[in-house]
Amino acid sequence: MVGLCAVDCQEDPGIRDGDKEPSLRNPRSLQAIHLKPLKREAQFGIPSCDLQLRSFSLQPLQFFSDFALRAAYFLGLPASGPITLPRITERWTVPRSHFIFKKSQENFERVTLRRMIQIKDGNPETIQLWLAYLRKHQFYGVGMKANMWEFGTTEMSKSLEEIEAKSLESAAPWSHLGQTKSIGDSDKVVADILNSRRVKKAADYNYPIHEIS
Image 1: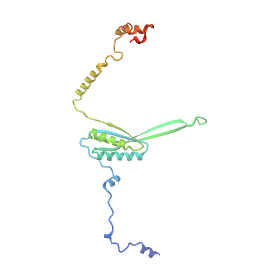
Image 2 (image 1 turned 45 degrees about the horizontal axis):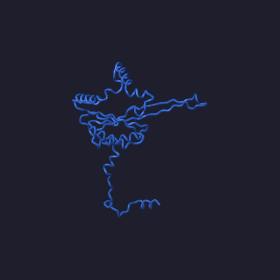
Image 3 (image 1 turned 180 degrees about the horizontal axis):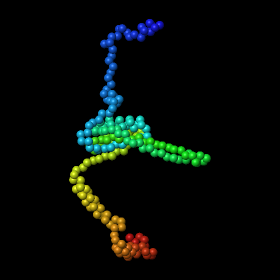
Image 4 (image 1 turned 180 degrees about the vertical axis):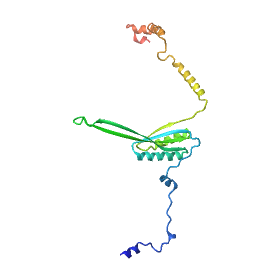
């Protein structure tokens, strides 16, 4: 039986090594899934966006962090991370019951895990596109919070003065809205209203209603 098994387990002598079909190589895009995400190097190192990911479970947090880094690479954004942030631990102590177990208490704990991905030297429009793509394909159980920085010109003070001047011009028609008049003028205004023809007609009960206006 041992000899028969040895003969049956041998390969067919008619099949040569050259006749075997070569195994197909997986595409590079498929191989990249099992490798670390690629990252681009920042030229100046100026922070443009900090994306903070939060979750109560580790597996979805790691998965979405990997997804965000791959999306940033293909959009041409230099990303660094994910950086592990300190955990947020919350505890609550509540009564166990409202009857005979009222004096005994029960503790509940919730631990929030956090990761941060930082984008450097990124175009604001590209960063907004990246964040919109992450919101569209957001993974369940993972929250996001982003802080963005945009840099303007050195003539920002002049533009702010122009904006302030335009706002004052637009607010001119509303200068008398609300209690903007002084107390001394209010008595005169009230007296003019009471002495007006419309108020006198309304105070006269014998006057026809359709002629008050």
